[in-house]
Structure formats: C-alpha cells, structure tokens
Image 1 (cartoon, one colour):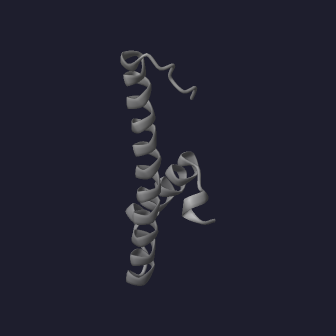
Image 2 (cartoon, rainbow, N blue to C red):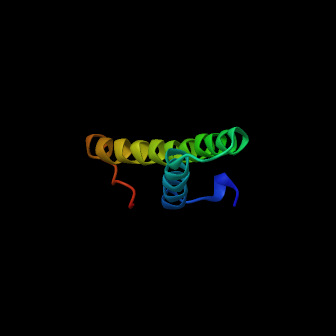
Image 3 (cartoon, rainbow, N blue to C red):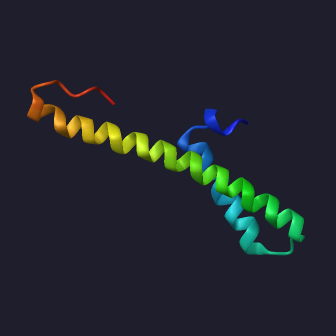
Length: 73
C-alpha cells in the first residue's frame, strides 16, 4: 500500500508492528535496515496526518475570533 494513501490508523498500526519486530531481534542486518526504513516512512505518514489535524484544530479555534464558522471535522 502506498504511504500517501494510508490512513493514520493504518500507518500507526503497521509502525507498531515494525517496532515490535525490531525489538524482538533475531533479524539479519539487511532485514533490520529494511524495517527501519519502512518505519521511517510510516512515521512520516503519521506526522503528516498529525500536522494536518493540528492545522485544522488551530483553524477551528481561530474561527470564532474572525467571526467565521469552524469547518466540521
């Protein structure tokens, strides 16, 4: 699945699995590096979703000050 189409929950869940596999050990260096790289991509997807949520929240909180109705979530 392409990272840009993943939901936050999908990326978070897969990232959790990646971390568990890395913590369990027993992987080759190549496998560990591949998982690490996948984890970095998944973390970036999660961060993108969270930044978007922060921006929406900031806009909703600022809206009453400008007299605009907040956008529905």
